[in-house]
Image 1 (cartoon, rainbow, N blue to C red):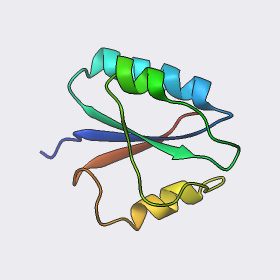
Image 2: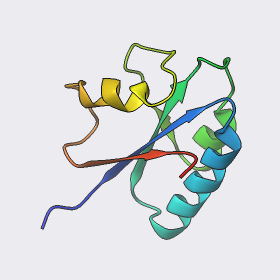
Image 3: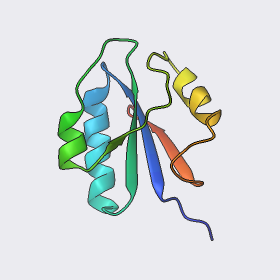
Image 4: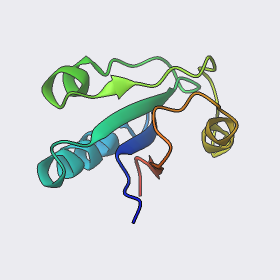
Length: 94
């Protein structure tokens, strides 16, 4: 059975407060899983230093910084350099 070892959370400035809750919940139950944050800066740049440091989160840089709505997930699907073969992608506002 294949297992997911990486979670990518897509967030923007307006729903980052929800991303923090999502990250804390994932980290509580799965403390050894890799979590990446894909930042959408369309609504403005925002700092993620707190979750990067406190929850050991990495920022996923795919070379695009402004997506809008669901296009971040589409761009993510087209990437060949994802951190892992089995990846779970979540919106921060799920």
